[in-house]
Amino acid sequence: MSEIKKLTADVDVEEYYNNYVDFEKFSKLCIEEQETLGYNWSYPPFDFDVDELWKSYNKLKIIAFKIEFSPEELEHTFSDEELEFVLKRFERIKGRLMNDIYVLENEDSRGLFLGKCNLCMRCTREFGMMCKMPFKMRYPLEALGADVDRTVEDIFGFKVLYAHDGKLPEHLVFVGGLLYDKK
Image 1 (tube, rainbow, N blue to C red):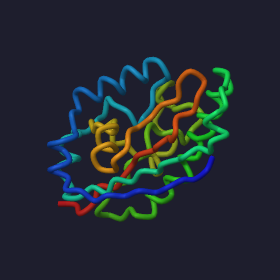
Image 2 (image 1 turned 90 degrees about the vertical axis):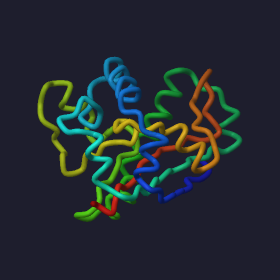
Image 3 (image 1 turned 30 degrees about the vertical axis):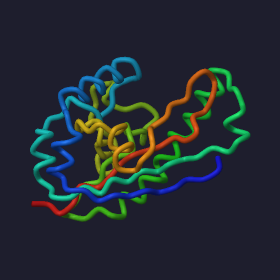
Image 4 (image 1 turned 120 degrees about the vertical axis):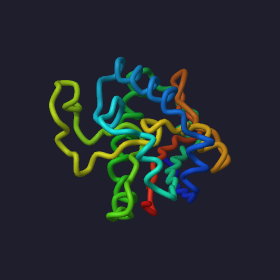
């Protein structure tokens, strides 16, 4: 790994909601992912109104962590098992990166996780149990209906890339944020 860059942008929530949020579309994708990879408390269905959550804040700080790989890492072809191991290692980094978001929170803001919550080895939702870490678990932008790929492209000027054919992408990006300036 060459470098982790932190990128931020502050946007108006109403404008962001109108341009990037389609809860019906993205919640279906989250539910499909859960059916394959296991259920998670940070993904829908929720026991609250997502639209009301968005409408409760004036501002959104989008926080992206862009992980760039060295030429040697990009040249290497990984077996499926190796690639899965490498990508899981980066998933574990999310917990440390989330600290940058947690420290921004106060009573008038709400942090947004960097993708699906991975605080527990297996989410208790899979077993019909309550979340074991509700004080740390946050909802990610995509679970609240945001088009994260388009957000990154439009706001930060690069595409979200994915590993394929045993190769790492040029970069990985984890996107979270902070809803703030509560109404």
